[in-house]
Each structure stands twice: as structure tokens, then as C-alpha cells.
Amino acid sequence: MRLRYFDGDNFGDALNPMIFNNVLPSFFDEDDETDFFGIGSIIGFDMMKHAKNKIIFSSGYSPAYARKYGPVAIDDSYKFYCVRGPLTAKALKLDANLAVTDGAALLREFHFPTQAKRYKVSYMPHWTSEYIYSWADICAECGIHYVSPRTPINAVIDQILQSEMVIAEAMHFAIVADALRIPWIPVKTYQFIDDFKWSDWTQSLQMDYHARKLPSLQRYDEAFEHKLRKKTRNMLPQQVIGLSKRLMDRYQQLFVRKKSIAALSALVQEEPTMSKDEIFNAKTDQLLDILSDIKRTYQPTQRN
Image (cartoon, rainbow, N blue to C red; front, side, top):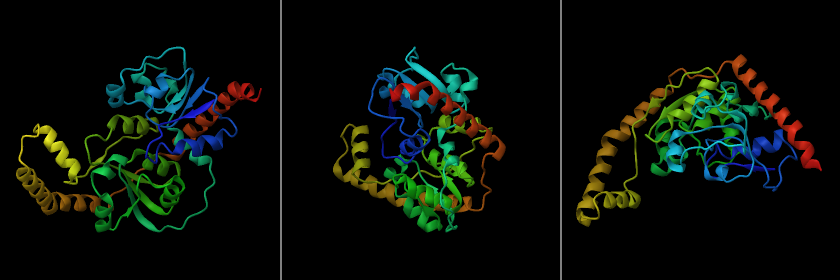
């Protein structure tokens, strides 16, 4: 059985091998007869569609990805043990009881060294946001510790544990913080941040999702120039493009950037949230029971 996940430049996806190789030791190999899909909004991705037999454990669905990859055609090759939340279950017309929570909750079972608190607040943007603008610079001006979504996973966990609270645009930064019992605040800077995914997870733990809005920022660089040329069908002279870039960058520096710094700084004083212990523990116990069922069903075959 293979462990499958989206292998991207993203902290959330990297949780898969760390968690599942620990909770399912000696379980995975390169046999492509059956694929195990865990953490991530990957239901409907091409790699799942083309798998022969699929075990779905705590995975999520996103309508935004469905628009890109097409509708999910569920057939007998799918075995749903649980999904991330009630919105995924409803969208796929699954039994509502399959909505448990994100598999990153299993970090509760890990024993991490006790960490002294070094940061009042830590912030992680969505991995795409980091390419759009240098949010590390904004955090530096706010006195907030910045954590890149491309940071190695053990280092991210250490920094979460060293924080009194976290601000998260990256959903799994909040999910892991919640699993480690560190309070968090969700933010949204760009329109591509997927409210469906956030609501799916928060509703699984009987929480509401209310993201604080931060003004959008971007680099006015070659990538922006390429988009501008494409939008205007390459009809603008270089002098006009150069002037446009300078004017927009100047406006952003004078007004928008200051608003972003003020908005992010203000969040430090807000009350963070966290799932209730009894709900979180009940859901994590449920995930462990499901894993036991998967072991009973599949591991004996693997040993032969």
C-alpha cells in the first residue's frame, strides 16, 4: 500500500509522512494496488482518480479544486473511512457520520519536548501568499514572529510550541496549533483563501470560522508586468507599464502597506480561539479507532 498526498512546497501536505509513518508503522510500501490518502483537500485530484483502490482517511474536498480537476466520480474503488468535515461529506453525498476531523489532530499522540515560550505571536501565510509579497517584512514591522510555510515540519512544530498564540492564513498552521493546544486566530489576505476548507474543518470541531481580513499586498515585479501585458494584450508601451508599476508601488507603500501593518498589529490584542478539549479529544479518539479498523483490515494482507 502506498501513502499518497500532494507533494508540494507546503507545510500542511508535509504532515502526511510524519504522522502516518508513525501511527501506521511498517504499513506502507510501493505496492500500487491500494493507495492511502490522508491529509489535504485532495479528493478529486488526478492522482486519486487514477489510483486503482483508494483508502480515504480524513481527506477533504474543495469546490475550487473541483472546478480545476472536474467533478468527483465516486465508484467502487473508493473506500471512505472518514473525511475532514461535514461540508466534504455533504458535497460528496456521503454519510454524515464519516465527517470526523483533519488527520493532523493525531499529533496529540506525539510526545514533543517541552518548549519555553519565545514568541508572543507567530504568523504563517498561505504558501501562495509568500510568493505574492514578503509577509516576513510586514511581521518584522509588527514585532510578530514569522514562520514560512516552506519551513521543515519539525521546526514549524517547535515554533508553534514556543508561541503563546498563532495567527494563521495557512489552515494547517491553525490545525496543528489546535492539536498542540495553542490558541489561534484565522486571517484572510487574498481571495484565493478557501473559506470552504476552513469551514469544513472548524465545523468538524463545532467551531465557527470568522477570518479577520488583512489588506492585500503584492510585488510589482516582472511577474506583475507579465500579467499586465497579458491583460492588455501587450498593447501598452514599456514606458506606460513602468510608470504604472511605480505609481502602484508608491500608492501601496504610502497607504495599503500601512493598513496591513496596523491590521496585523491589532490582532495581537485580540482573543484567540481553540477547540474545546472534550470535543477535540473525542474526535481524535474517533480517528484512532478508525485507524485500528484499517490496521485490522489491511495489515495482515501486507505481511503475507
